[in-house]
Image 1: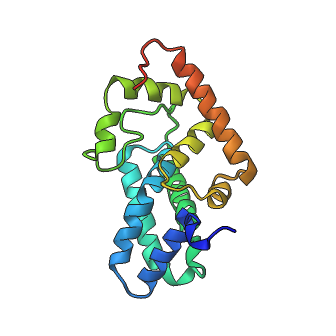
Image 2: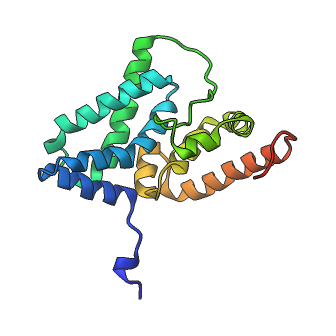
Amino acid sequence: MINAEAEQETLASRAGEVFQRFREGHSEAMGELVAMLTPILWHTVRAQRLDRESTEDVLQTTWLALVRSTESISDPRAVLQWLIVAARREAWRVMKAQARQLPYEIDEDALQTPDSDLPESVVLRGVSQKVLWSHVSALSERCRTLLRVIAFADRPDYPELARSLGMPIGSIGPTRGRCLAKLRASLSADARWELR
C-alpha cells in the first residue's frame, strides 16, 4: 500500500497551494510563486521566438494579470495552466505587434534564466553550451518546446503539460525519449562535444 504522504507533489498542486496562501492574504506567497514558476514560464515564452527583453516584458505583464485575476481563478490548482496560457497569449500578442518574421535560432542567452549569475547559467556558458544548443536547435519545434519545458520544471506535472502543450499525456514520455535519443545521437557524432 502506497503511503499518501510519500507521493510526490506535482508542480501544479504545489503552485496551487502557494497561490491559495496568496489569496488568503499572505503576500509573501506571491514571491514564492514567482520563484517557483518563472523558469517554466520563461522557457514557454522564449519558445515563441521572442527576444530576452520582450520575454521579460511578457512575464511582467503575465504576473500582473494574475494579480488582477486572482479572484477569477476558481480552482487554485489551475494557476499553472492559467499562467502558461496567459504567457503564451501575451507572447503571441507581442509578436504580432512587433510584426517581424525572422528565422529563429536559439541564441546564447535563450535558455538562461533571467538571473545570469545563477550557478546553472555559469556552467552552461562556453563552447559546450554552443555545441549543445546548436544541436537542440536542429531538433523539431515539438522536441525543442517539450525539452525546454521539461528540462526546467523541478517536478513536471504531466497532465498540466499535456494540456498546455496540446499533446496527449501518454505521448509526453515517449516523445521526450525520442527527442533525447535524437539529441544524444547528434551529439555523439559531433567531435566538438565532450562528455562531462
